[in-house]
Amino acid sequence: MRSPRTLVVAILVAATACGGGGESSPPDAAPAPDAASSPDATVDAGPVERPTKLSQTGLYSDFAARTVAPGHQEFTPAYVLWSDGAVKHRWLKLPPGGSIDKSDPDHWLFPIGTRLFKEFASPDGKRLETRLIERTGPGAMDYWMGSFVWNDDETEATFKVDGAEDIRGTDHDAPAQQKCWSCHVGEPGRILGNSAVQLGATAPGPPEVAAALGYLHANCGHCHSDTGVARPDTDQILRLSVAETTPESTRIYQTTIGKVLSIYHDPSGEVYYRVAPGDPEHSAIFIRPSVRGDTRQMPPIATEHPDEAGLGILRDWIENL
Image (cartoon, rainbow, N blue to C red; front, side, top):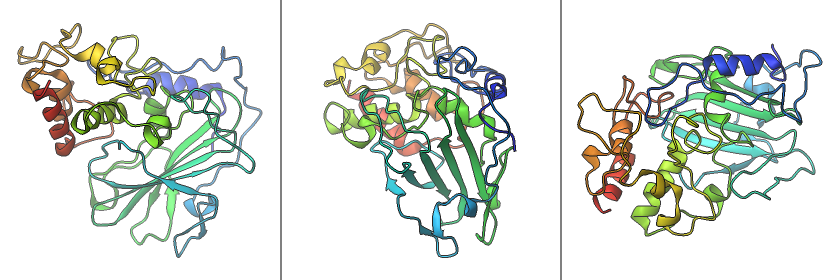
């Protein structure tokens, strides 16, 4: 299997990743970190043997019994990314003696050897895929990401470099390996959902406002951020910082409310604002997540169905502005 610690990865990412462009249509390519110019980048020294079966990764001490091995800490982010209703479980394993660098509370950095597993199951309990992110070295691109797809009798999950579609009779798709970078490239620590905002601090404001801000942070903020693939196409920032202690101080408020669209235009010609206070039907931040199958869709990948509960959160917030 090809090692992720190669400059080839940077080329693949640039050629295949899908961003969001904020108000523009999803681009055909998204920028990736420049591994060649990164001060801590490393050049591949040869192939690295990677597990091809989930049973080989060490997640389970007893695979048949699904006993999670010691040292794998399960966690749930405060604000969850919509995945078409899939039931998800997440485990983080740090290397022996390793610790998370939290000096920047908005961007945690994880030690070499860190592993993050994320299991997706259908609402009726079918295991569909388990994703793995591992930090393999000190460089900006020294991460392995991939998906293991479960078989029908759940005796094993197998790594699929090209992903898989409609797994086990559902419409759930596992991403191709290089597509993983589409979302994770925008976070310096590469791991999403494991940060101060998600595991300690809370979004500012009363519950209905905090819920909307947290929803945007989890579902949009990894691309619409200072380092995300939606920049520099738009100045719209949908990521929270722990330093933002009131709704009005958030860049979500400052870059959306009452802001006229500068790039994206709804084909109907009726949507002119990122957020039109009191009017979700004329707010792009509400309309675009409600659409699937055309260039208006947000997020542009990894979802085939609108999140009705999430749309309700956004509607309530906008109507009460």
